[in-house]
Image (cartoon, rainbow, N blue to C red; front, top):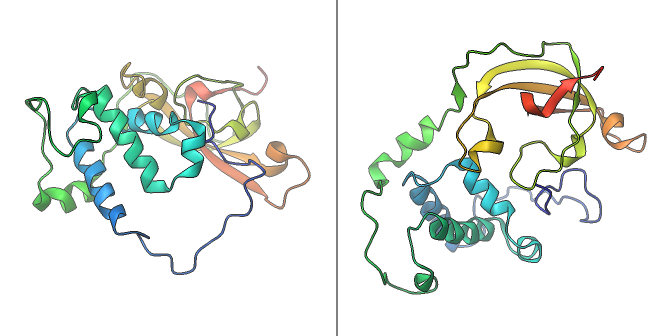
Length: 220
């Protein structure tokens, strides 16, 4: 979707300040918030693309005024409501007000390390052939979706070259809408920085992983 979260290449936000020896967390509540988000994600009531979409859907003024883990926690509240795991009257309450939902998976502390190290692979089988090949020039589609996408706005309707093919993977644009995984071929596309931002840039090139529906042959 087009939102304030898609900041790549945007101007007006000032320089990116790199904190030397930056700690994992800056406040005591942050690891707890992360743990709660991970535990609820393991409940299996939403997928990663749905959760990303909800974070992106936070009101712009709120999104820009809070910290990273606050964004995650604000989105978690909305996910819990959307998945019917809590009732609206329970938001802000210190106790449950309605009976718990049955059949929700639990993430036990002794399983956390194994689950995080395993991750959640997104590669899937497909019975279709890849439409593009390494070395081929392609153009990204000019698109302004109202929902989640992994194609940054700064590289839409731009020429690039396929540099790698990664097989078929879960298509985030449909998965976020709960319309199924609909696996699509995934490519790495290299863009000349001048193609993205014009002559006034110090960058040389940018590589972006693009699902096949984001691309079309350059001659089209």
